[in-house]
Image 1: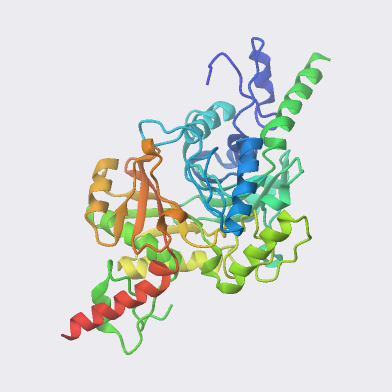
Image 2 (image 1 turned 135 degrees about the vertical axis):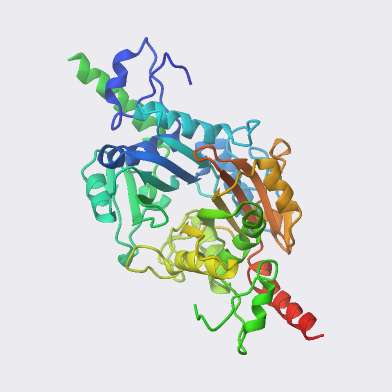
Length: 236
Length: 236
C-alpha cells in the first residue's frame, strides 16, 4: 500500500482522487464490498472494531481457478483422483482458509489488506479490524460475515435505515421470507447486498451483518469505472 | 435446551453425566467442535467473548441434503435448471447464511444453540458468544472461524501449547507449509483440528483460530459413544 497513491471506493472516499499523482488504485475486492457497507454505519455511529470472516469465490483468483473448481468438481463426481494446481489443496467441496501468502504473524496478505485498506479508505486509523479470509467452492461472488462494534448505539432497525439510504447498497433482509444475501443473489449486480442485520448483545453497541457482492463487478471492473466517472465529473 | 438434561462433551464436562435423570443430550454438531477447542483456552486464560462464523457441510442436514448438493452440482455443470427442495435456495456453488429456523431477533436457532449450549457445557454463564452459521457446498466436515477475547494474555505460542496438551485436539498449524485445518483434512478423523492460531491485536487479549472437525464423527456419533464410555467408566 503506497501512501502516495489514493485507494478509492467512490461511495466512501470519492474526494481522495484529488490528491492523486497520476495513479489511483483499486482496492482489494474483499475490502471494497466491506467498506461500502461500513461507511454509513461509521457515519451514523462511529465504528470502533470490526471482525470479518470472508467466503470468497474462485473468480477472485482468475480464470484458471474457475477451471480448476470446474474440473475438480467433475473429477470428484466421477471418482477420479484430483491434482490441485492453482490452489495448494482441493477446492471442490472444500473451504481453504488461505488467500494470498502468509505473513510471519500468521495472517495472510489478503487479511492484512482488509485491515490496512479499510483504515485508509475510511480515512480513520482508529478503526480496528481483524480478518479471516477463506476461499469457498463458489464460482462468482464474495460473501462476508461482519461483526461491528460502534461507539454509539445503532439498533437493527436504525442500521437497516442508514444502510438503505447509502449509495451502492441494497438492504436485502427479510429472513422470514428466506431473503438474505447470497453469492447467487448478487451475480451480475452492481450493489453490495446487506442482510441478516441483527444486534450483537455480547457488547453494549454491537451489530452482526452479512453481505454479498459480485467480485467481478463491484470488486473490480465496476469500481474502476466508478473512479473514472468521479474523475470525469470533477473535470467538468 | 432442558435445564434438567445435561448436555455433555466428554473432553469438556464429563462429570455433568452425574446429574442426569435418565437422559443425557448430545449437543449440536457446531457447538461440540467449538467447545472442545475453547475449553483449554478458557482454563488457561478465561474466555470473556467469542465471535464465531461457521462453514457447515450439508451432511449436517442429512442424506437428502447430500443428494441435493450432488444432484444440483451435476445439473449446474450440465446447464440444467435446478430446483431446490431440501434448502430454500441453491446450495451448489453457493453459501446460505441460514441454518435451522429464524427467531424474531434475526438469529437462527442454530446460532442461538451455539450461544446457549456453549455456556451450559462450559458451565460458565459469563462467556459471551455471538454466532453466524452458514451452510457451504461441502459434503462432510464443518469449519469455524473463531475470534476469542480472554481475560488474561495468551500469545499464539501459549495458545498452541495449551491446545496441543488438551484431549481431542490436533494442533494443525504450519501455514508456511500450507498446513491448516480443512474439511478434507478432518474427514473420518475423531479429533478437532485447530490451526491458523494468531493474536488479534485489535483488543488487549485477543486470538483468532480456525478449526475443522468431522461433523459425522465428533459432531454426532462419536460424541455419543464417548458419553457412553464415560458412563461405563463411572459405573465400574
